[in-house]
Amino acid sequence: MSFDLYQAGPTVADLAEIDVEWPLIAAELDVLDAEITLIYAEDHGGPTALDWRRLRRAEARVTRAATDTATRTDPHRAA
Image (cartoon, rainbow, N blue to C red; front, side):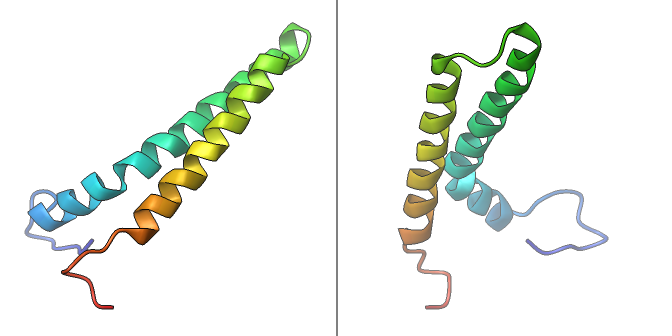
């Protein structure tokens, strides 16, 4: 992303980049949500097996999304 003082918002190219990376962003938010759940569970007897499973699955989604994002070919980027 580039920064221009006279530009009111993101460019079309910036929005396109965000759109490409959105699955990874969403997966990372899922990990954050699962981690917050684990923190709050400490006050209520500790995390359950389901809480840990949710975290593992969220981490796996991040790995898959990162791989998908990294392997996409964009004709506008230099090789």
